Length: 454
Picture (cartoon, rainbow, N blue to C red):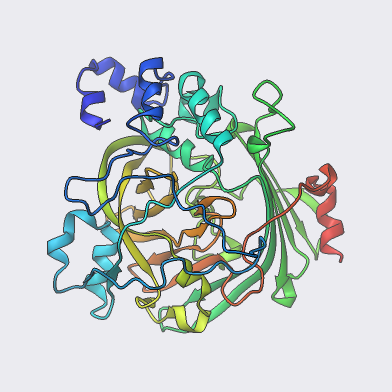
């Protein structure tokens, strides 16, 4: 469905209501498109007119023989060659398909380029997720001015979105399995081109929103993801822990931190907004983590359009690379980063009147198939482009999913030249391992001190 077909008939008062995040669920007739012209998670099933974006045909779900979750996933398209490359010399030809940060990087670094490969619409999910997405389409709605949702469980909440709040909730609740573990390293590349290990950690996820057998909408308590992180390195921070309950009512979100020096678990409400993220040594902000993290109520969200863009996708080659090979001065090694042409929803976040934030404006680019934020741009208080988020989406047919924003995400500072990549599994033996659900006590605040004392 084209955005202008949705918005043009609406009265000005209705548009204002949508802008404030109070959209209602879609009609039965609209939802029926999820079984015809739309793929089950909401993306347009058809390809584009010139064939550079193919039709969605079920996604990529072929698991290699003998593969076990947590093993390194191969580059499933290793035999392909780039169709073309975008450089500073020809970027004007592709300007309408590039984010602001991408254009800035091409201008700043003569050796930076985008190698563009054939597009593979590999996003997929189990049938029960598709079924719940269909149910959510007619029952889910936003609340709390867009900062909460009701009536959604077990699938994408708003597969046919009507505003920016719904699009970003789809991102928050995108499918990547229900319980997982990953070790990771966060790397920083300084403005002088020096690669530095910021932190090495272990992270545990469980997603009650996607508990297929054990719960349902009427039993769901609102905590859609529980996330526990234990720091391993550097030695000065070894044993520190962070526990996060993300809730569909963002006012009920809870975060706890365990600091070894204090030997106690305490609530950490500051782990949000534009607080410098200690996991990235302060180069990133907490609300940039995982695409978006924590409440976004300091900004108003506006759905701008859907468009074709060049974005990182099916980036298994980069995930298999060593940090030494991928993290080169100024930017990630273009030889290792796969770009494809995909349709994305464009959402603008503008500073709300009376609020403060060091990034008063952001623009998010959200994949129509997987609902992952693939890129974002951020401007400073002077209106100058400042920072750009990226993710290297991992094709994981064992889930099945395109796993984005859970791992291998980071950001460029286009003003200083430094960048970082967090939750990176490069060089590690385990890569986002699906696991059995852990005992309830594992995700209680009291467990943080026990983990830190191991």
